[in-house]
Amino acid sequence: MKNNKIKVIGLFSGCGGLDLGFKQAGYDIIWANDILKDACETYKLNIGNYIINEDITKVDLDSIPSADIIIGGPPCQGFSGIGKRDPNDDRSALVYSYLDVVNKIQPKVFLFENVTGIKSSKASDGSKVIDNLKKAFEDIGYHINIFTLNAADYGVPQKRKRVFIIGNKLGVDITAPNQTHFDNVPNKKQWISSFEAISDLEFPTENGNIKYKHEPICEYQLLMRKNSNETTLQIIPYSSPTDKEIIKHVKPGGNYMDIPDEVSTKRIMYFKSTGGRTTTYGRLDPEKPNYTLNTHFNRPNIGCNIHYNEDRMITIREGLRFQSFPDNFHLISKTKRNYYVQVGNAVPPLLSKAWAKHLMKYLTEKPNAKVVQIEKSLKNQPRNPKLIKEYAMAKVENQDEQKNQWLI
Image (cartoon, rainbow, N blue to C red; front, side):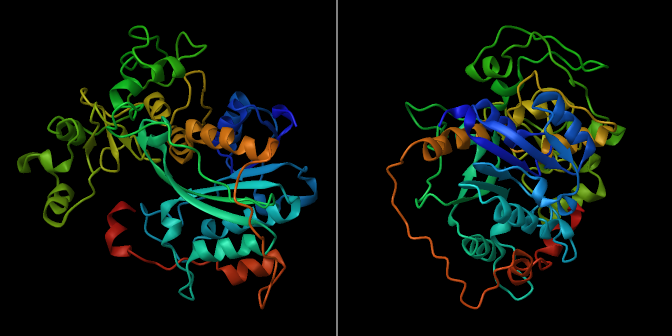
C-alpha cells in the first residue's frame, strides 16, 4: 500500500490541526466533518474541500466513505479540567457519536484525542468514563491502547498534555510515537522555547500582515516559515486600561503573585489569599515552552498569555506558532472570538504528524509488535451503539466545581 492510498476520515476536525499533521505525513484525507462554519472555511482554505459543515448527529452514516483510519477529537469542554463540569453538557455525549461512525466504517485503526480530564470524569453511576469508552470500543471489535502525551515532547513549544485512545483491528498492541524532544536532557533535542517559537515575528501591526525581523535562528522558525516570506494575524488583542497596567508588573515566567497589592484587582487579591493557577496572569518564560494554550489566549487571567518581554498579550499568529501551525496557514472567521476558538481547540499539527508517521508502519508493514487477542464477548453488554452510549454514560458528574468556578 502506498502512502497516498491510506485513506483518512476526520471527525470533529475544527480548523484542521489533527488532519493537517496526517496530510503532511502523506495520508489521503477523503472526508471530514465539523459543526462550526468558520472552522470549516479555514479547513477548506488550508487543507481541502472535503469537509462537511454539519452536526455529526444528523449526518447520514451511509454517506460517509470507507477509510483505513478515522481520526478526531470530540468536543472536550465537558471533560476539561479548565471549566466547571456540567452534568447536562451534551458536548460530553458527542464522544459517542464518534463511536457510531467507527462502528459503521470499521476502519483498521482509529485515533481518538481528548483532554486529560477524560481520565478522571465519572458517569452518573460512579464508573470512569475512560473505562466505559474503552469497553464500548472493545465491544465493536477493537483492541485498545491509551496514552497521555505532552506536545512539548514532539517539538511543539507548548506543554500541552492530551489523552489518545488508539483502537485497531490488526491484532497488535500499538505503541506511542517515540519522544523527539526533551526537557534538559544532554545530547538530545531540547524542548522548543517560547523565544524560539515567536522571536522572529515582527511587532504586531494594525492589519496583522508582517514580514520577519531576521533570518530563522533555529530549526523551529525555519520549519514554521517554510514557503513563506510574510504572514498574517499579528494583531494585538484588546486589553483594558487596568490589565495594561497590571501586566507591566509580571516578570518573565511569573504570574499574578508578582502584581503589587496597590494595583491588584479584587479578583487578584482573592487569588493571592486562596491560591490561583500557576498560569493566572502568566507571562511567558522565554527559555521554556508555553503552558497549554486555550481558547481565551487574548485574556491575561486565563492562561500564560503575556508576551515574554513586551507588555501585551500574544497575537493570534503567535498562538498559531505555539500550536505548531505553519505561517502559511491562515484563518477565516467572521468574529474575533472565533479566531481564538479555532486556534485554542486545535490539536498541534506536529504532535499529529508524529502519530501519523508512527501509525503508518502499522498500516503499511507487518509491525514487530505483541499480538493480542481481541475479545468480542458481549456478556450482558448491549451490541447496539445507541444502547452502548446509554450503558457507557453520557452525563458527567459535577466534580471540582468549587475549584474551577472562577473560570466560568
